[in-house]
Length: 301
Image (cartoon, rainbow, N blue to C red; front, side, top):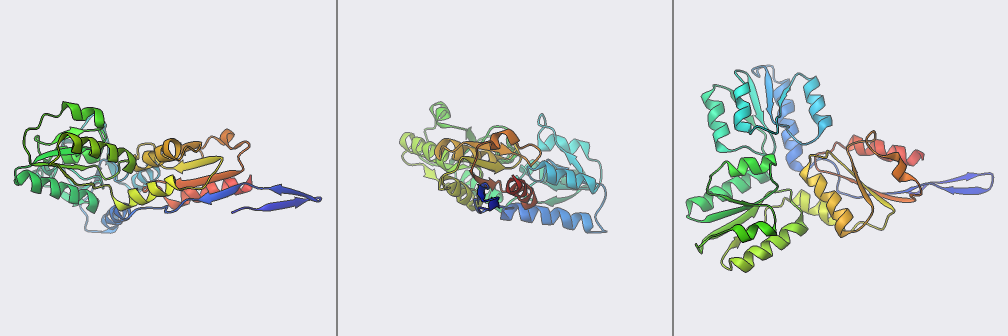
């Protein structure tokens, strides 16, 4: 969108804004937020209501849930399994990132009501890994260290071999011909390609099962193919994996000057000087109204 202002015969060009689609919540986030909304509004829900980790990675959403009385348990030094020790009664909701099997077992043993808001794509990864382990495969899982989705997967079995990049592959020592490799759902579609190629080169018989979700893939492709601009703004929580990957694709692959901000307040307004064309997108856990606020601000400049 481009708006021209005419003042005393002079044409002043306002900033051109390209909204890179898709934006707004992905299906997994919509499902998770509906689940927790239903729990909050159900008069039969056992109180208090706990979130075992952030339901999604977005501080605005988390703050809103806290204002409704939800207790959010989040400690980066503790696993979800350990956080359960802080709950004695009530209802606990498992985040969209998924949890390990022992979390379900422990919640049952403590007599807690629990609600599983895990993303369906994440649960597919869990089930495929369990299937291949049961069938005698060596399993390699690719992900980001200390991410809650990774924590949930690695808790399935201590036999799972975890790697984060191509450098980690040299430390793998697998002699079996039955090898299965899969990955975190929110990784970079461009980084994972190199890792898969390296794994295939070392283990020709390996089964590669790319499980990056559709929402992540489509958004990263959109960033790669975005039009020329002076600046690209990626809106989302700095803890969101899919948001950080959008930033990386724009900056390192599309090679456009790119910034990541959580909201209008955190956007450095100084970077907008001499910017005539700006592209804007958001992560899959970013509320649409936050992007709309930034666009409204840009239109007023």
